[in-house]
Amino acid sequence: MDTKIEVKIFGQTYQIKAGADSDHVKRVAQYVDEKMREIATATPTVDTLKIAVLAALNITDEFFRMRIQRKEADREFERRAEKINQILDSI
Image (cartoon, rainbow, N blue to C red; front, top):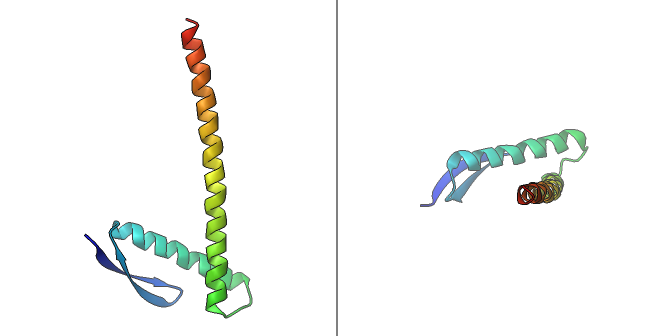
């Protein structure tokens, strides 16, 4: 069931229609708001669109880096599992 959740991002209120847990949607919105505020503090622009695009780029960069870390962790897990299997097979 979709519900409408009101969130505030960078001074603007949005009605988000979401099937997900409302607390999750609020945490996501809060994260975007925090990123936009960080950029607004560090960047001397008042253009909200530019701040939003920079926030999107930063969040996407974080996501890509985490995805790479996850793939590396998965490979390491597979390597260790294979090593354990080899040890068990030799017993």
